[in-house]
Length: 183
Image (cartoon, rainbow, N blue to C red; front, side, top):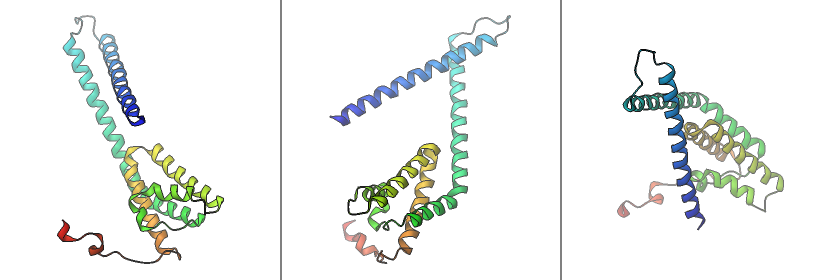
C-alpha cells in the first residue's frame, strides 16, 4: 500500500514540477521578448515564443552538462583524498572490518553495525556517524559524485579489510562464484 502511495505522490510531484518549470520558462521568455523588442517590431507570434522556450531549454541543458562535467572532474581529482579520508575514518573508529558480502551493499555494512546490539554503544554511534557523513557528502555533491564516492569507499573498505587482523585472508576462485555449465 505504501509503495503505491509513494509512486502516486512521485508521479504527481513530477508533473507538478514539470508544469511549474514550464510556466516559469514561458513567463521568462515572454518578458524577455517583450522587454527587448524594438518599438518598430510587431508583437512576437506564438512560434517565436516556442522557439525562445526551446532555446532556453538548450541553454539550460548545456549548463547542466557543464555542471556535471565540472563535478565529475573535481571528484576525479579528489578521489585519492576521499579514499584516504574514508580509510582514516575507519582506522580511527576501529570498527570491525567489512566482510566480502558487503562489497555490493555498502550501506548495509554500516547499518548492520549500527543495529548490532552485541557491539558497544560507542561503536554503534560511530557507524551511524560514518553512514551519515557518507550520505551527507553524496547529497551535497549531487548525482555526479555518487560513482566516485562509492569507488573511494570501496577502495578504503578493501584496504581496511586487508589490514584488519580479525579478517581472514581468503580469495574466492572463479569456480566458487559460478559454474560455466550453468551459463
